[in-house]
Length: 249
Image (spheres, helix red, strand yellow):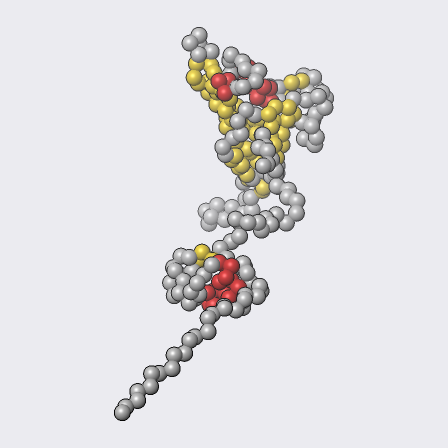
C-alpha cells in the first residue's frame, strides 16, 4: 500500500531555487482538503486610443502573478506523540513563514522568507502574503486546542506546472474502461465499432450468453478476450428415433 504523502512547508533561499541550508521545514498535521490556484495578469491602460468609439488600443500585460490559497487544520487532541497543551505551539511554526527577517543585502530592509509548499507532485514556490488563524475548542482553563489556518502564497510571475513522462495510466485490473450497451445493440455491432472482429472471444470473456440480446446499460469490456480462440461447443449428437411401423392383418 502506498504511504500517505504529507504536505510540507519548506524555507527556500532568497532566489527561490533550492532549500535553504538549515532552514525551516514543517510537515502539516492534516493535509488540506482543497488547493486554490489563481492566475492574474497585470494590465496597464495605454495612452491614446479612441475611447469614445470604444477603441482603447492594446493593453500592456505585466509579468503576472500566481497565488495559492489553502487551509490547514491543527488539533492537539489528535496528537499521539509529543502532545502539547496549546494549539498555538503548533501554528506558530506556520507563522514563521510570513515573519519578516533582515535582508542579507540590506540589513535595513525586512523581507519575509521564501517558502515552498509541496504535496506529492504539487509544488508551489512563493512568499506567504496573508495568514488567518481561527482558534476553536478551548480547554477548561481557556487554552485553544484546535485551530484553522488559512494561507495565501504569491509569486510575481505565472507559474507553469512541469510534468514528467506522458502521464498515461497503465491498464490494470479494475481500471479497464467499459463500454455501455444501448437499447437494440448487439455484441457483434459494438465489437465492429471498436475495431474488433472476434466477438465470440469478447462474449466468452464477459460471460455473455446471448450476444444478440444485450440489456440496455450493460457494461462490456470490448478489449477482453479479443483474438483468443474460443473452443467449439461440445453438443450431444441428436438421437434419431425411427417411426413406428404399422402392420395390418
